[in-house]
Length: 259
Image (tube, rainbow, N blue to C red; front, side, top):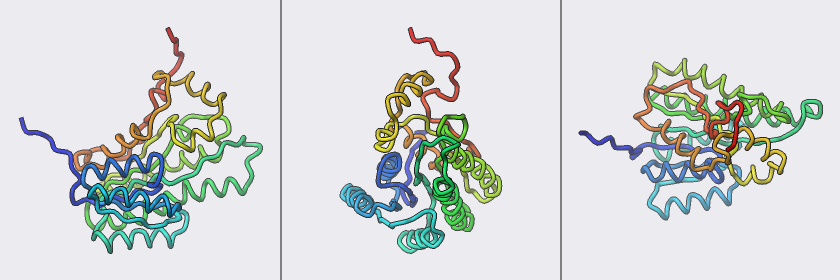
């Protein structure tokens, strides 16, 4: 039987938000599969530290400080990637921010900030990377949606709208680029134990989540990264326009009896 080999040797992957959390876990997995890595993040120290770690393990990697909500920054990121590596085959767009605030208390300033980074930033990144991929005739784009964009949750008016918008936009781009060898998918993580979540989720939030998660635990960044990396593989070529829950069964759950 022919062995199916999973490798990304010769492929270049941009990972936004790649200096921490899910983005960092994904960058490390992509590097293990021999991809070239471009870390795009606002945190220069953490970004360069990540690149140094990757380089020490034999990976060809660069850091580009990027504000994903700034069109000029985004175009500069793509240009820097093409200058260094000659092509971009993979975009892992995970940069984003979170906020928990009720609908009646959500200010216009907070709304604009969440939408600007999470939704407009995703549009700018996917559009700019998509141009290079469509021209080449190959690409894998994975965007970050959320269970908050699929299911209603208190305090997530702006955040849920931004992530629901990401899923809708992803489906449109997947249709437009399907004939050009470019797949576009999204992940919808549930409760994932990142540094940000540890700060944001108080005891009541954790109890509410765990009551609805059949696996009765939070997920890890590595579990989300593994799903992302599969969607970045050449072998995932017949999967596009999909929002994949990575949530321990949260989206499927109803009444859960623990016993």
